[in-house]
Length: 126
Image 1 (cartoon, rainbow, N blue to C red):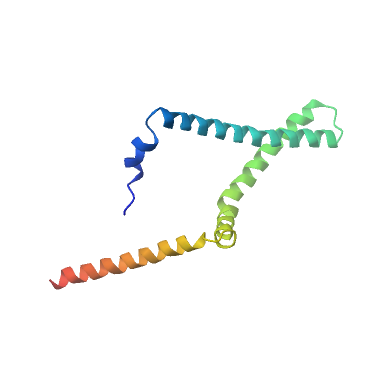
Image 2 (cartoon, rainbow, N blue to C red):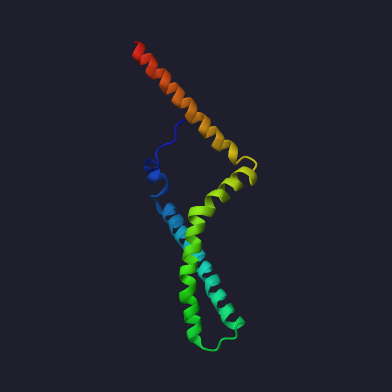
């Protein structure tokens, strides 16, 4: 059975009151995740401020300003460089079945390409 394209699944998973509630729950969940992440950033700056026993609030503003580009650079590095090896390691070593479906998909594509070549050869011969 070939799965339907995602556009054709739109009515089943997007339309209707229940799906609307699920969408809003998803938005709420994502918003809470973002706030939780911001909480750690704010707590980290405040902890550094207290740890260094700084008394001028201007230093806190400077720490926020300086930490922002550092976090952006680290986040970009993680997205572009570290996340792919992490995903590979987790798929290969972190799950019992994770890498087998991937290898199966590769094999299926190889077989489909072979079938297509054979079909084209049959068309040329006929």
